[in-house]
Structures are given as structure tokens and as C-alpha cells.
Image (cartoon, rainbow, N blue to C red):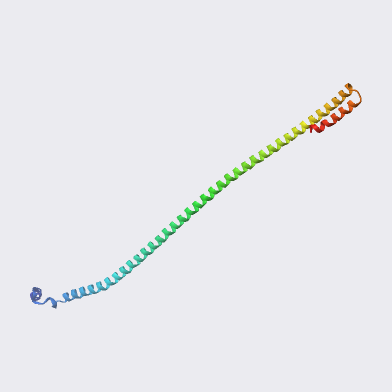
Length: 177
């Protein structure tokens, strides 16, 4: 046991080289394997991350484009709504003015009809008054003529005087009209 211990001790004491130790080569091989595997994995991970970054950039640019389109559509819709609102307000204003105009024309037409009917009634009243006045005048003339004839016959005798009076009485209606 002592000799085995001595051999182990001599080897441990550095009588052999580090490159002669199999553990060193296993460690070197492991480091090379890890570096090679890391390089391959790193390139694949970097490629995946680059692809993912490109996809995200593409999605962001697409979202930005869609947002701009949506904003343009919103602005267009607001513009159309404003135009429609303005047009509706102008139509309402036109309708209101048309209604007021129609009301004014109807009121004026009613006033004209009332004035026309009033004038017609006044004309009929004037005609009736004129006819009544003429009838009263004619009746008064007839009564006056009759009374004059009767009076003259009583007071004046028959003869030439009676003929002159009758002629004068006969001319009275012509002179009155």
C-alpha cells in the first residue's frame, strides 16, 4: 500500500504533464463541444430572434398603416357627417323660410279675400242704397206729381192752363233723371 501511495503521490506531485492527464482532455473536449454547440445554437437563436424582430417590425408597420387608414377614414366620415349636418340645417332653414313665406302668402291671401268680400259687400250695400234712394225719389216724384195734378185740377179750371200744366208735369221725370 505504501508503494501505491507513493506512486499516486509522485504523479500528484507533478512528475507527469497536464497534457498527459485524461481529465484535461475531457475538459478541453467538453469546452470545445460547448463552444461549437453554443456557436451553432447562438446563430440559430440569433436568426430566430432576427426573424421575430422582423415580424414584429412588419406587424408594427402594418398596424401603423392600418391606424393611418383608420384615422383617414374617421376624418373622412367626420367631414361627411359635417357636410350632411350642414346640408340638413340648410334644408331645415329653407323649409322654415318656405313655411313662413307660405304663411305670409296665406295670411295676405286671406286679407285680400276679406278685403275683396268687404268691398263687394260695401258695393252691394251702396247699390242697394242707391236703388232704395232711387226708388224713394221715384216714389216721391210720383207722389208729388200726383199731388200736384190733383191740386192743379182743383184750383185751376179746365182749359189752356190745364194743358200747360200737364206738359210741365210730363217733363218733370225727364228733367229729374
